Every structure is written in structure tokens, then in C-alpha cells.
Length: 158
Image (cartoon, rainbow, N blue to C red; front, side):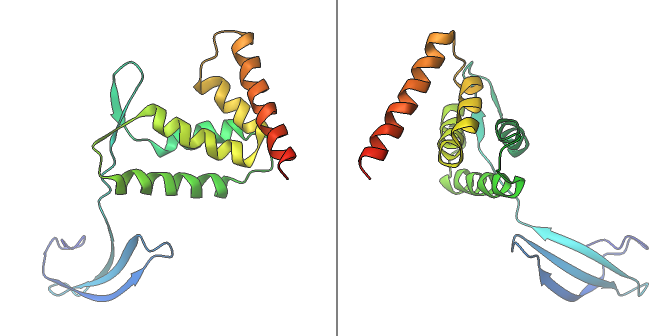
């Protein structure tokens, strides 16, 4: 590691600590030639798959886009940003560990939709209305009727 003060690469690690989430290591280093200390952070290079959009375009997986969409769907509802970020962390980890170079945007969307449905029906409907691109009110009503039917079935089975 190059010293930020004298640009020499001869240094030693004085202290190493793992970050709270365990995904990064903080290292205190001392430059041998100039004696000054500096901090470096080491983190695993995350290799995320490309997302294949409906029109065939490919773009990098973007946790920021997913968080923004979920925040919009959960606006004014009792769902914390922490819960959203933790879900997106687990989603990101899932796709990293899958080993696939590409994933369909539908796979990402369906995972988000199922989590929102689990958390709150209003958030689910908000997200689904944008994600599923309903053509008219009839498609939207069909989605709501299906949701009401499944809710009634689950209440009957209790």
C-alpha cells in the first residue's frame, strides 16, 4: 500500500479490525520510511450479475434503484428504511452467491413484490402497479381481486 504522505510502499500493519457487518477490514498502517500512520479499508470485490431488462438491454445490478422503488412503495407506511436495506442486502447476497452472470429483471421484481406483499398490502399494490405495468383499470382490479381471494382463503384456513 502506497503511503499517502511520502508515496513509499514500504509499510507495516499495526492494527486490523473487522467492521460491524463483517464485510470490511480496517487496517492502521505505519510507513517505515517517514514514520507516519494512515488507515486503509479492505473489502471483498463484489461481482454482481447484469440485469436483463424486458427490452433486452443489460445493466448493472443497482441496489440504489431497488431501494428507491421500495421506499416509494412504502411511503407513509410503518416500514423502516432499515428493513428495506436489510432485505436489499440479502437480495444482493443471494444474486452474488448464485454465480450467474446475468439475471432477468422479472426475477428481481418478483422477489421484491413477494417481500412487499409479506410486509404490507398497500406497498405491494403500489409497487405492483408500476412493476407489472397494468394497461387499464380492469387489469388492476383483477390483481386486487386475486389478492382479496387469497386473503379470504388464508383467513378461512386459520
